[in-house]
Image (cartoon, rainbow, N blue to C red; front, side, top):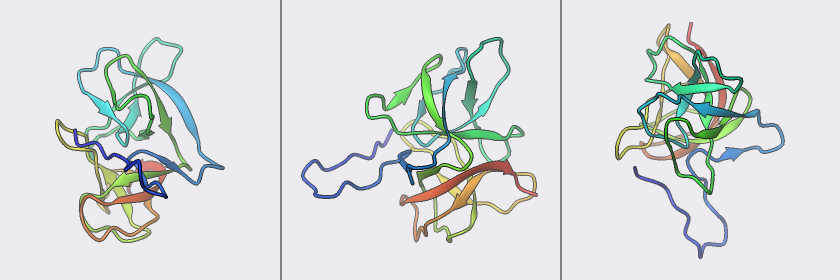
Length: 161
């Protein structure tokens, strides 16, 4: 995975993929990743609720914009843990939270964005998506002029109408 890192000698820290922004009003919950899942999960990855008998919130990765289940939110950055495996507990930013996410192309401010899944060697990314029936993760708050830029996204999971 291409993990973004901080330069320890800079005066102001730059945003990190999955880092929460606008701290006063985040909606963050703890959730357990699908114990029978096989994927590797990381900060910035969109997750959805799954069925199970646990008393904990159970989540699994969103497979992309055509996933029929609405996302719960996005796994947030944790300084102690870069990657998550099946059965791990993670923190998920839900509706109303502002999270730094990576763009897959140019994105206009105010555009609705959908999520792509993380793959081996690639971070999850967001892209402008206005397609009816697609799983939307939120609204772009910042402008991305190219792929690979971190922008703030207001998390508001829904199905685009």
